[in-house]
Image (cartoon, rainbow, N blue to C red; front, top):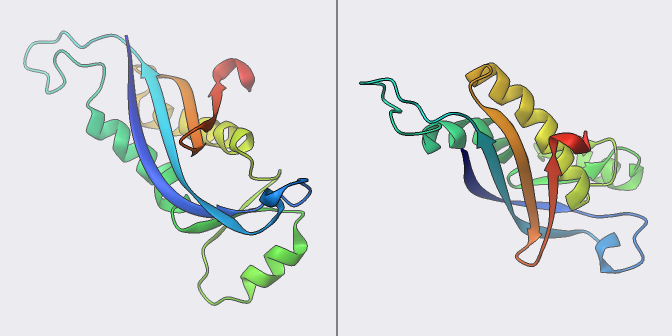
Amino acid sequence: MRITRRLEFDAGHRIPYHDSQCRHLHGHRYAVEVTVSGAVITTDHDPELGMVADFAGVKKVVNEVIVTPWDHAFLAYAADRPILDFLSSIPGHRTVVFDAPPTAEHLALTAFRLLADAFGNAYGSRLRLEKVRLYETPNCWADALAEDL
């Protein structure tokens, strides 16, 4: 059985070598959908009886690992020195640095890697992370699956 939890956050980025407007500083209302799988709990009196996992527990993990660190941050590429120099001049600015340009594809893969570890720590082998879908806009998204790693 699979369940999915969706959360949203706001962040800025730029794709420095892109041939269109995306090379400029801009922001998005991102959405992330996290799909996990597992057996439906059948243990009598278990608080999660009838569930794969409580959606609140899934939300807690995604918030801690992705939403809280990335929300209202600038998602920057480590090789984009002019932007990193500029952002470091702003006291207290929240910047998250990635080893590749922060495209929807790279963000989805990064989120998958981070969440796979986090769900393993929180749930052991009881839950398996199946998919992370990261929406850059309502019409554009990237899916990261275990086989993509």
